[in-house]
Image 1 (cartoon, helix red, strand yellow):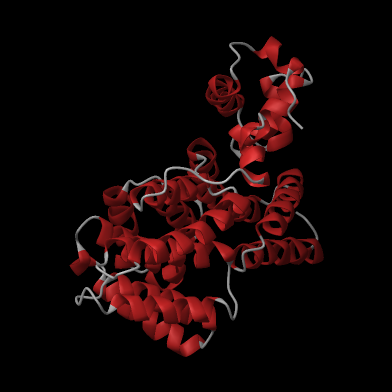
Image 2 (tube, one colour):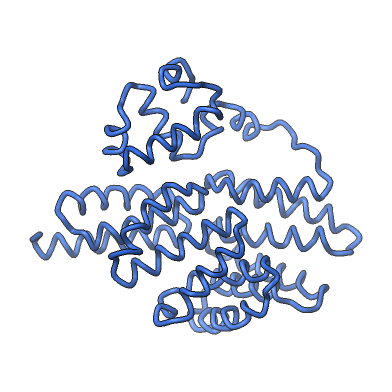
Length: 328
């Protein structure tokens, strides 16, 4: 058994990684959780390891990496303690939401908040609200929205109040009343919170503006959507960025100006998800699937899946073609 001091240090690392994630410091969360996971695995601290896996699962969910998210949540769902199970379900629910599987997200998250796990599932309530509204089941969202609003009023943090207002705007019965609520939410987002949550509010507001009958609704929508797209692309949140691009096309925009970000997306490396890029780079220097998995805490099967997904994006048919590509 590890000394108590080391165990406390690993628990602090776990809490720090979760805090970094909640505050939008995704790179710090990834670095801290990955290092903590390695140490926990080496010292046999299963509970801490599983908890840290759920931090990485949340990041994978944001990026739309389904295989990675599933792998990182499997043990938490089967044998994890309550906090880890809650975080695992929330990660899978967020993944479903980002990929447009709204019914699946709704059922998964509704089960999570219906029982004794509800108190620990506060962060998942806004996801449930959005999933319910997009599934045309707003009645299933009202209780969650009210509960989150009450919690936000207690914690009195601008970012929490902003998300609560986003939920209110989504459920507004008056088609014209949502705009002012969205505007107030964005004002609060500017006082603090995560770029990911602010971008989600901008996306939803942009969708609302496009559908509204305001005189300049489409122009206003495009401004919000471009801001959301920049944030999602910077965070590697590809499913969410794809939703914004679809909405921009619906708002009448046929293409974007050619800037540095657009050129970067034309580069080979930018065609891949962050996880695919890591795997492909290691495969390009000759590592086997097992060796890559050992470095990235993936199974050889998942490594193979990432390569399978990456090959057509890169225009190659086999592993031997990877060394000739510029993956910088």
